[in-house]
Length: 423
Ligand SMILES: Cc1cc2nc3c(=O)[nH]c(=O)nc-3n(C[C@H](O)[C@H](O)[C@H](O)COP(=O)(O)OP(=O)(O)OC[C@H]3O[C@@H](n4cnc5c(N)ncnc54)[C@H](O)[C@@H]3O)c2cc1C
Ligand code: FES
Image (cartoon, rainbow, N blue to C red; front, side, top):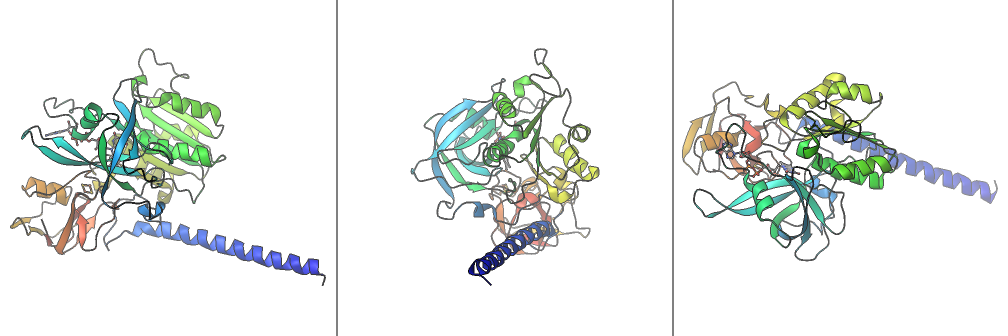
């Protein structure tokens, strides 16, 4: 055997070993990712949030991640829609340190000091906002929609946090921010074609996913189905149109459900309808996709089960809800126990029979005048984390934040048995 042949054989063996290691890694990741649906905390995972195998914080290198809240400065703000109801805020760390990276689709948690309208005293308000741009070295960007009072209750106060951002947060304002987190993010390990389905302000995590994918994965096919009522609500219209013009692999489908007179079909938007499964069926080729969904309650409630009914493997559907966790997730959640269950709030000294119609332990506690902290009400910010002194809870969705041993998130859980909470 010549030296050349021997070298070739050695090279072939090394390449084969590398290929085996890579394939094994991919296979393990795929299995872990599918197994996550079995839930955590030994509880039944009623809804699926399709969490990936890596913890949310693993995305960032540990030395750049910070504990608790850290101060950021608003570098600039920018209005993003014709109605002037969505504003982006560009944030830089006050300590001048490099930004922790994040996974496109993740969110930041903010603690604001807001004046309480009843007492005129400052109170803490915690809210989460998705990062709305690709990870960059120079800023984090969030984009916030102003939330008015519900149309049928015009006398109640407008959204506390969104109004505060729009009315009081200016260039130079300082904000307390938790490190990026969240299990809803682009699955970079599995480069399947992507279908993004967004309604209204639900576009924010999709913008981060879209910008990242187009900047880093030049060949990945991406469809965006984006539903708004009309041109006034069309967020980052110019940006999306430019991306569609400059990237052959990006297919933009904007749907207006109540177009204004001056909105032109084919120019401002593509479809005079809501985003529906029927639209997807007629515009998508038959292929294996990853679907990402974020939007209003009706959009989520029609699209997520609709995709499954269409035959999409539920492991390929990722979704995130912005509001209180009353989406699809709670349909089965409002009680998994059939036996009467007593919830004891030990610090408040109250033992109360669980109301099977209650949506979560948080709402049950509030309805019974038990003082508990809360923020996002969607299992994302960790504010309602409470020690469980006895008993067990059922989660109706995967927590989107790390939960300490022996604790639970009240906003996304119900009692599985008699329960004693440190509240
Ligand atoms: C993971 C995650 C990511 C998110 N990302 C974004 C994002 O990118 N952009 C974004 O804009 N939002 C996002 N959100 C939503 C955001 O966190 C807030 O929920 C949203 O800004 C509303 O908060 P608020 O304090 O303004 O409203 P709230 O004060 O919570 O009020 C909500 C609504 O309740 C009404 N209300 C107030 N009092 C009463 C009452 N007594 N009776 C009846 N109704 C009442 C208000 O008028 C308002 O309509 C995200 C949420 C989550 C969980
Ligand atoms: S209120 Fe945010 S996790 Fe429960």
